[in-house]
Amino acid sequence: MSMKCHPLLALSAAVLLATSALAGQGKPAAKPATPAPAAPAAPAKFVAPIRGDALVSMTKPVVKRLKDEVVTTFKVKNPSTTGSIAGLKVSEFWYDTAGNPVSGDEFRYRKPLMPQEVIDVELRSPINPKMAKSQYKFEQANGAVKPSVVAKF
Image 1 (cartoon, one colour):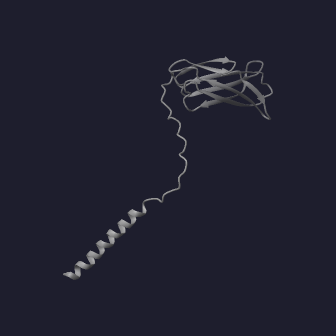
Image 2 (cartoon, helix red, strand yellow):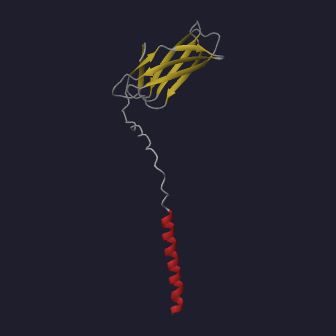
Image 3 (spheres, one colour):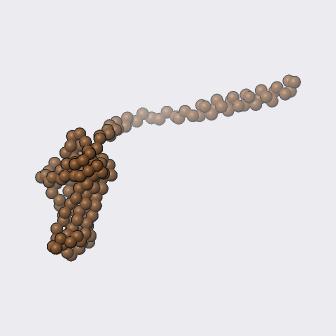
């Protein structure tokens, strides 16, 4: 009987020794002192989106001609203090002298435009020799958008 107990005791001792050795390896070595990382910015708060008509402020568009496209840039601001603008879309349409559409581009801001937030809008339209004038259309997911031009923010 004592012959059968010795292998069982040896096996249980080996298992106990292995688990205690593995438990000791789980602790990482102490690292030298490093400066604390900067505190992360506060997490973004949920701001309910504006339902219906939303107002935005925009700067005067700057139109530049590059090689084979017209680049229009301006800034857009949500002047609201209480509501965000979800799914903002800005479309630019170029027309010829007869009023026929000839070119255009579209910009989408995929995040909600938070209250008092300012974003840069860049529209790139292919050049067409018939281009005479442009028009902008602002839209949002929950209704219409009414832009107003301001000198600066």
